[in-house]
Length: 261
View 1 (tube, rainbow, N blue to C red):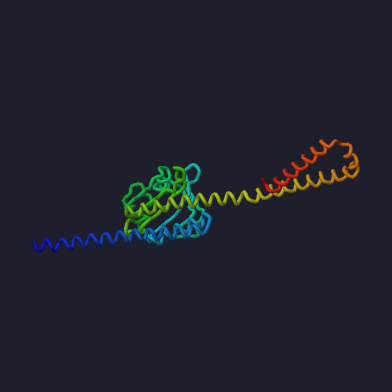
View 2: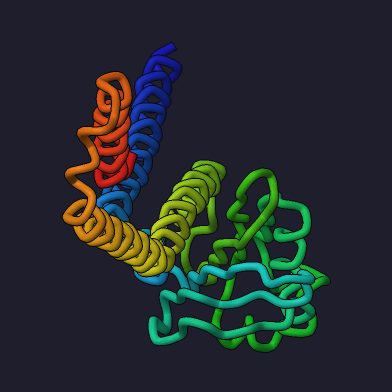
């Protein structure tokens, strides 16, 4: 009876310690999300956004590799646009035949998790390289937009480090969703910026055309009016009032046009 009472507090202590570790893990994830949001909210350039995300994920998990790929047309290749281990890599095309796990994530739009990369039959062609880098697990999380994968976050852990838990994978999926939204905003910004000079030139040209037209009409009327002003007395009162009304309407239209309405 005494032994059972002794085991009960030990079991309770283990449960409490496990819960504390779980909460600490969640706190680390939340802090990483906040820091990523702070970094990517300060820029609308997609290269800076993606590099910030790979760096933060690499530091959070102590990864062997963390990269972001964007899918190419045709899905036979992908473009490496950000890398934690080598930030100088910004635009490198890779053949998806060399990365079957990446191809699978892009084609299925679902997360691919390989807990023991050395034992996976689809990676036997790179088994030597994985052993040299002491790679343990590989996780590929698709970046989706409108139901289709437009890219993926590629993460590799060291053999002597912890593998990814379910909570870690869910966290990476949250980051992939944030990445998709950040890319969308960056794309809209780049598109707006590229169109802005054209829009400004069109507006300037339209303003000059209006100025030229008004200038021409004013000179024509001034020249004609100086010769024929005396003839206005021949018009009836109703006709003169109608002319005044038409002039007022024309001036109103010109005023509104100048406001861009």
